[in-house]
Image 1 (cartoon, rainbow, N blue to C red):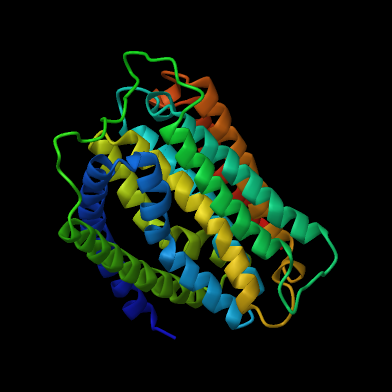
Image 2 (image 1 turned 90 degrees about the horizontal axis):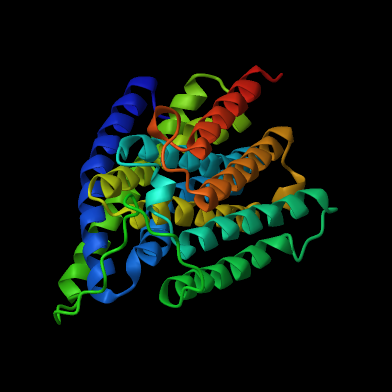
Length: 339
């Protein structure tokens, strides 16, 4: 295992790489969303969301293969809570209005609903007896099917919306598809993939250093996975979200977080596959159930904010952002103080 100084230096260096590459990745993604017609919601939810989640995927899969079920599960679910907090931080950065008000769209509502549905499925797995097909619980392949179906619905919501937000002076509409004839070139996609690879590798270094730092501090697996590794592996999402907000690509920012969250639920399916000692869902404890309940609560709170679209609130953020921050602080405190 890495020594404390090496882990600390590696963590800081990799975070700096993520910050630089994440900004460039956001700019490239915004361009591709416009010229391909995919839209910022799909670009953020699928392409950016998956890319920035690769480090967390590797962390959960590795932990499960090594028999650390609690670390694998808490890293997945804790990452969802951490990234929802990052959306609240992005709301603080966006000063014109509440971010959820300005970035209103049916696609974002669909993604929030999809996240709640996907978080409910592992809860069923935790509650059921230890059912397995081989050594994998049946809810794991179900998660993959629901995710793919949900992404299809999000794409339909962008291309053929059946609900439209009420436009206000603060509503930021996504730029229309580029009709000038400009097309995405192979160079555009190769550049995007190269930046994505840099972000993913740097994120993996952050995860490894974060695990080493946490282990050196002698913390429990549920706290390590739910807070330290989950926050560490989620730093790429934070960089992309803040950069997108600064550039006015609000749908891309929200799509990055919500898309990353829905993809993070799939960590449980992969971890269940890699956990060879039986069903992962039967091996978790109260700490992981707490993170699942907290993530569901935060996702529901965020959905209410997206529906209500409060223009301004306390500290110029919406009630949902304030509640998300409060819920996370209380959850971390409870987990840290639990025996």
